[in-house]
Every structure is written in C-alpha cells, then in structure tokens.
Amino acid sequence: GQNIDQPTEMTATEGAIVQINCTYQTSGFNGLFWYQQHAGEAPTFLSYNVLDGLEEKGRFSSFLSRSKGYSYLLLKELQMKDSASYLCAVRLYQTGANNLFFGTGTRLTVIP
Amino acid sequence: GAVVSQHPSWVICKSGTSVKIECRSLDFQATTMFWYRQFPKQSLMLMATSNEGSKATYEQGVEKDKFLINHASLTLSTLTVTSAHPEDSSFYICSARDLGTPIYNEQFFGPGTRLTVL
Image 1 (cartoon, rainbow over the protein chains, first blue to last red):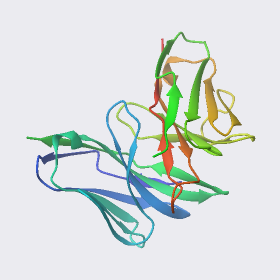
Image 2 (tube, rainbow over the protein chains, first blue to last red; image 1 turned 90 degrees about the vertical axis):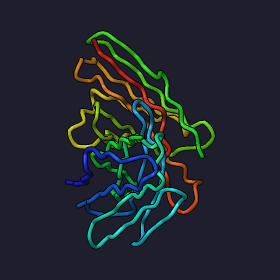
Image 3 (cartoon, rainbow over the protein chains, first blue to last red; image 1 turned 90 degrees about the horizontal axis):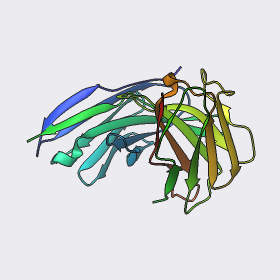
C-alpha cells in the first residue's frame, strides 16, 4: 500500500517562516502536489514537484527529493489567513490513470 | 483555473434513503473525474476514479454497490450513496482532470458536499 506521512499539527507566529514536511513510500511515483484546504472547503492547488529541487512561487516554496521520498512546503511571511490544513499528495501512475493519494494533512495555526 | 461545481453543497437525509451528488466541470471537458471522502480532521481518501463512458474503478475497501458512480458525459459525474447510514456521513469531494492544463494534469476540486445521515 501507499504510505504518506505529515505532522498532524503545527503552530507558527505571524510573519515567521514554517516548513511542513512530507515523507512518502509509494510505488509508481509521478509527481507530488501540495494543497491548501480551509475547513469545510475544497483543496486548492499550491505547488507541484516532479523533479528534485526547489520550486518557488511567491511566499510558498516546495522541495522534493525522490531518492529520500521526502518533500517539504515552506511558507514565508506567514499571515493569519494561512491558518489551514496543508495536504501533501503523491501522484501515482496506475493502469493508465494518474491518481492522487493524499497524506494525513497538517493543520497549521498561525498566531499573532 | 478550471471550475468544478458540486450539487448539493449539503444534504441531510434519513437512514436507508439514497442520495445523489453531482459533479460538473463548468468550462472544460473532463474524461476523468475522481471521488474522495473526507472524515472530520482527516485527509482525503480516494474512493473511485470515474471515466466517461466506462465503469468506475473503485479503491480497495469501497463498496461499488453502495457508492454508485455514473459518468455519462464529459462534464458530469454523479455519485449515489445507496441506503445511506449514519456512518456514511462525511464530506464528499469530487475532482476533474483538465487535459488542457500545461505540463502536468492537474486535478481541479469541487467545493464538496456535506452529507449527514440521521
């Protein structure tokens, strides 16, 4: 089976930087996504990595190491509105479909 | 980005009844749609992959006779929860793949449907 792990909860201060880690053990890896989800809402796309290295997108950056089965999402200049769950999802190539399997999710609380 | 809608956004039903949830891609054609279930404070669990014009592919542990999926057109997939019970109460989210997106086949998520079975 697929195994994707994230810390359950994190707390950080407004204006600070926070790193959310994701480790995975899967078969047929075909990319890793990070999504943000506010309570009761659908996930929204943040970033995508398929090659090793860092992808930067404004205040958000995501890193991938395929050999280590490891990714992180870096949020800079935290704002109160960044309080949400952050989902790591691995895309697997299975029988012609590219399915997403989600990690446990990390609930981030930003405090003043 | 591409827009996916779901209807209804929330539903309350009695135990034993069936509930149909619609997922529509509004401005693109989706040959593949996905159905997820999310329990409180948990992550999304893929239930099934729905391909237009063919039978859905269900994940292990998901009862295909209980969760009926129909993908009759390139813009509409439906999930019917048959003979719903309180343990089926959950947040159901669909997503659709837009093959027109650049480089990677990103999934676009609907706003979700909150099902409560009394």
